[in-house]
Length: 374
Ligand SMILES: *Cc1c(COP(=O)(O)O)cnc(C)c1O
Image (cartoon, rainbow, N blue to C red):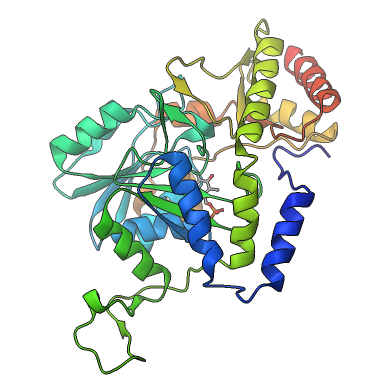
């Protein structure tokens, strides 16, 4: 099977992990901060907190942003469930705003329509690696005093109007799951330019416990620490960060390879009547986490099954979050975003990752054309 995404691990990466395993620290050691500094420097954000996974990163961001019981947070239905679950973890209420039918990203006009007196934050998701309309989203946030948390799990290396995603908003989260741009096995990171948010993120990662003199109510002695918030154990290990540091060196080549392969798909499908290729965007850099086509002849299911049958592990990203049984039975039974539904009925994610060979891609293109042409 040709997967839709997979990691690229080389000997340098393996040696970096082995060195970490032989060092004094398996966790809570110096490689955590080294990895954080590397990603912060790359994205241009001031502070970074490495964490157990991308979902924990979103949870931590919601905590730092002060999301609490009854707070509404607006996000897109076309995303992984974690983008909305993180709001529920904090007692908040996810509110779904429909997507733009061309970009498949959350539509700023739809965000505006969903704002109420209880809205506290917006979680835009840079779906497939294409940056959302951040100027418009920031303007809405400013007008209504909302926190912006970018779910950038698809967008490490993406650029919005010449600026890398990571330092644009109050908080930005990344995932380092193996299908993402770089991997640590499981892992994630939150970036911010705000020192207060940074301190809250670190607290949340380690049980809400601090030893920092500045935050203690008293000090009984050198052993002393205090739990000041209800946090979690969301730490990442040093050997995972060793892998992350090594992977970061290859990110530019990973991004270039993804972009090249995306353009090969674009050209191959440009003249196909039954295939809609991704919207061609100007002024922003797409990080190309996913390459999604829309099958326009009403036969997405058949095409999907045929591709799987031909050894191509295509996927569907995503089932609208509100339509999962958990959401339907928790107050979202009547929610419907028409653009998201239309998109969901036609989308297929094709294989896209740096290690996809020319031969494999040619085979994928041939089969996609064959099955969509019927
Ligand atoms: C992968 C992903 C996450 C969650 O990341 P994990 O590291 O798997 O927890 C969150 N949001 C989006 C959009 C993702 O693709």
